[in-house]
Image (cartoon, rainbow, N blue to C red):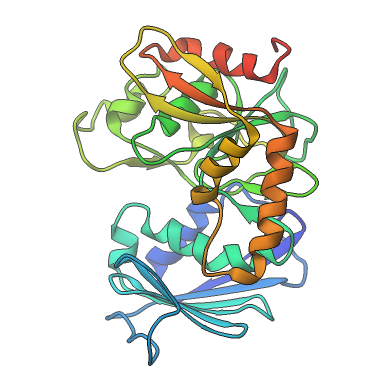
Length: 322
């Protein structure tokens, strides 16, 4: 399959029907391309996790992932789920994963993002772990530009997805559920994926209550659905950064925005943006993040219980009452 990813053509191939179905669903928001492939990503399902390369990894993130680096050849080894081999010079990723990577929530999407992000960085496109939405005055086609977006950045349990869904329920457009692309000069580009939230989050909004009706409201597993199946034409291709928010759930009656200094905003962004193993790209990445926080104000978003008032509070972060 060939997909257009903001002017880059991604060629994806797989050897497993379930893997293909998952990939097609995840990337359904992206236009099909007929151009020559700029990036190539092959994934196979195998019976067992391949052994790691010999020697010690140059970088390890707890027991989840290990990086073995040899110039432009990088192996990302996931002891629980599989292995990706990246050829950074030629934009090629080749992976072997076990079926558990498809059955465990979020793993497949993370593997794809990990396999793509180093290639995208070398082409001026930087993934960030965030929810991204845009405030629009009227429906726009997928290729529209000029709208202002908000980046909602936070750890699991911070209220990031609930905040994002409050915006979508109020008519905002979706740029990414989990991994928007930041591109110079100061642009948020959409990144595909399914909308994922716990049943009790879906139950909070009239437009999504039906999704939670047949699910256990206290279930530990998230539900994943295409956002466009709930809000037709919800996707927006790109937006100008209008605000950066760091939500946190608190025991309070109303939401509040607390302005953050640029150094503090940068400090809080780094864990959600920089991949420490990719030392070659860190200076350019830091420069882009510095440019981002200079172009858009940053706030700590102190969350109260009423999701219906969130869109107005967040719109006020843009500074002109839109």
